[in-house]
Length: 148
Image (cartoon, rainbow, N blue to C red; front, side, top):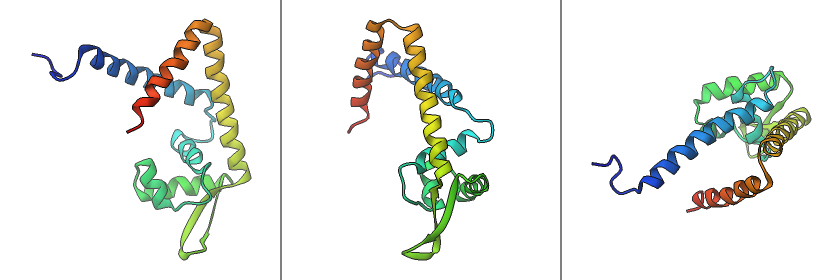
């Protein structure tokens, strides 16, 4: 009897393959821009803050799936490096809003550029034009999976 009786074998295999490749690819992409003075968790917080005007530590903790105390530690270290600033919430003076500093924005952009260059370089070096077009088409299929 099949482990997944309601799913086709190709769907199960595709699921396993996509998850494995995405996991490895994500690690490789993140390592391409790894800066020795910040952790992967800190880099994730910086990236999350890049599109925000200011969020609380609780909101960041929830979005990152960590405890509030852990996020407070992460934010404190990022603030000590001059990458984020904490300022009072104009709507609730008891809360602090966390936002990127100019240096934080620069670091996020530098990381994005390094990751883009690494992946584009790998695609250029190791894939034919037809293979790159196949990747673009496959991304369209995977993108559809993310919409409900």
